[in-house]
Amino acid sequence: MEYVIIGNGVAAIGAVEGIRQVDLQNPITIIAAEPYATYSRPLIANLLRGKIHEADLAYRPEAFYRDNKVTLLLGRTATKIDAAAHQVLLEDGDKVPYDKLLIATGGKPFIPPIQGKDGPDVYTFTTLDDARKLDALVGKIKQIVVIGGGLIGLKAAESLHDRGLKVTVVELADRILSTAFDQVAGNIIGNRLAEVGIEVITENSVKEIVRENDRVKGIILNDGQNWRCEAVVIAIGVIPNKDIVEGTGIETNRGIVVNDYLETSVADIYAAGDVAEALDLLSGERRVVPIWPNAYNQGQYAGRNMAGARVTYKGGLPMNSIEFYGIPTMSMGMANPADAGYEVITKLSPEKNVYRKLILKDGILVGAMLIGEVERAGILTGLIRNRVKVSSFKEELMKDIPGFSSLPREIRAEWLNK
Image (cartoon, rainbow, N blue to C red):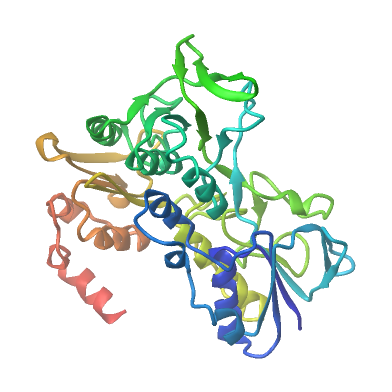
């Protein structure tokens, strides 16, 4: 049995550990386009800020691959899957045979068709190399524009601001963090960014990146405003990196569609992580949920199934947890329901930058949003995952720091037994 994994992110690590829970002997090969062992991508913002060193990015010990009998092909790009021959073709012409294959290629930055985007001084922010390139700018330029007010964009903005650059964030939506948070939460965080000196422009977009002698000199917004800058970071978000499956017959939608065992529509090929369109725990639909814990869990389930365990993936839960200049934030589940029929309970203490929001559907907790005070968030996450009806004790959950004792006795007993 030959296991092959394309990609070397957190989903790949989950898959290796999943395989080794079932099969301790058969070899595993990882094909990694990046020339580095697995590192924690969420930490590249701290690296850029100068808070940690590159050695601190390691997601597993150096001996991880050897101990798990993994052959690691670093800096090798997979270009094609020959499903009939059960082999992966590499850019250099080599072929890697497989019995079971996992596609864990993650996501790639979404780059909109902005005039002037091609050329020097335009960056993305998803990899270690991206962080290195931006780090090299410090001391050489003074002004930079970040396109995108989501998690990636704001962490890039925060990091660059802390290194002494004047940063402007441009966001198309009416607030920053529009995917994970509502207007109230977005305003709290936006105000905090303004306090420290990061300028945020909402309900606008970049029409053109202005160049002079091919170097970036500024931007033009859709409303005609001109802003000077010497570099631009495009951090609108990521899209599934599914190019490798072209011509394979593997079913795709937004991502690579997988079943409850993380199998694709082609035999012996699995997908996990940001590239996979897998089950969503709350909606029961297949969707891409590009967050770190989901990628690891999917990888682990895929690995166990590749090794013959046949375990059902129960679905991922959207969740975001991040801090902005002393304000911790967290959202989980359906934090921004799109239609009526949900009960929404909120509590706001603007003087403390504290906001709490619970979302119920038919009495069951399906989402939560916490700004400023996120202690005991695990209790809310557990209630959402277990589809607990909270109608009888929802007021207790609105307390600033609800404890385990806030839960009814029968629920406490059930959780303790588990």
